[in-house]
Amino acid sequence: MQIAITGSSGFIGAALVRRAVEQGHEVVALVRETSRRDHIEGLVSRFVVGTHDEPHTRAALLEGTDVVVHNSFDWPAMKDFSRHVQGNLVGSLDFLKESGDRHFIYMSSIAVHHFMHDRWEGVIDESHPGRPGNDYGALKAAIEAHMWSANASTGQAVTAIRPCGVYGIDPRSNRSIGWPFIERIRRGEAFERKGGGKFVHVDDVAAATIAAVDNPAASPAVYNLVDCYARWCDWAHVIADRLGVELDIDDSSPTAPKNMFETSATVRDLGVSLDRGFDGINRHIDEMIALGA
Image (tube, rainbow, N blue to C red; front, side, top):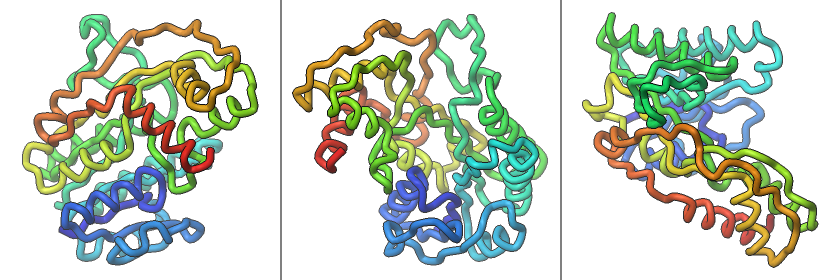
């Protein structure tokens, strides 16, 4: 199938392009004028240059395509609420409308959740209502709501993918999660960062997203992509061990989260098991060190 992918040159986007081509699809890729694209050039059938909030750019991107994977997000616009709403929200909703009867797959986020009801007893499945805690999560939840409306009113196929913190090697390797930690620990600086989060590997995000293409079970549907929980100090201990560095590490953060996410639908419908666990983070750290972090 011909898949239109926005945000195709970025961290998640490049992984989406690779996975789509591996699965036999052709990719039409939206990139900004300033975007690097050499890492996906040999994989993309056609590039469209522009942004998803431009009507003429959306029209060029949709031409001849069967499926939309909407992954782009204007991060600098978050500093200006009106610009954020116009570009990230209105631009995306226009894109949804203009995609017509094409399957619309949206890269949402687990950030649609902030407040979580006690009656789910700490295991949050896809039936839990979205209660975001910031403008980013609210944007994702709003677009999901309009996707459900599109499906109910026109029958358009829609899928929302909700990754948590995504790790893996970024096309700009020094932007990979954990890379700055390695640099600091290599210098012997005390590690005092508290907290942690839920993590999932970028290749699993790409595998789940592309598995939704031409998949009747995946519409209308939403999928939580959460593999494991880890504290930042857990990352730091592994890095310090690998580098043979002794330093003070703050271990005071809770060893387990208050809530985790149910992911059986991702396994059942998309065939992605999300079971790398903390071993996946270990391997990621080794890969970053091998790359010179």
